[in-house]
Amino acid sequence: MPPNPATYDTASETGAGPGTLDGMKRLWTPAWIARHVAMVVLVVGFLGLGWWQVTRAAGGNTLSFGYAIEWPVFAGFVVFVWWREVRHTLRGTPAPPATPAAAGAEPTTATPAVRRPVRVSRVPAVPVAGADDGDLAEYNRYLSWLNANPGARPGDYPG
Image 1 (cartoon, rainbow, N blue to C red):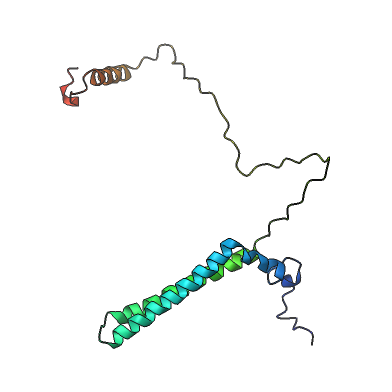
Image 2 (image 1 turned 120 degrees about the vertical axis):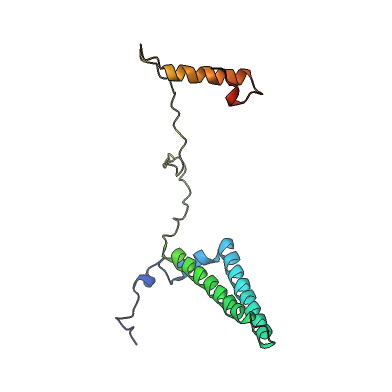
């Protein structure tokens, strides 16, 4: 029987599209296996804590009714984040396979993702002739007096 054209996903039929084995291989890396295990452990743990709160609430602890609702919500949030990350990974472009350089071929240099900073030599600004600032000179005298008298307070300045 041919597939229904209204619901048929042609994108998943491509060689590395979502839903194919090539696309699903991205979810079986060591990092993703750890995420799958963490999701299962968290969901089971949160649902177990929710059931524990239900039994406490049935025993007469009225505060546990709120927690009995809260823990399954946490479990649902973990499933939501996991599902969103799975969809994000499957929709992303897969990394191109590394091809070994041919013997005798000149290596190509690609622009690195992080570049070294550019060093710029800084030259102090030359003051304009005749632009003496009396307030600046007074402030510098005040700072040099504070430096010469380390135990003095700012109110002790004689100037």
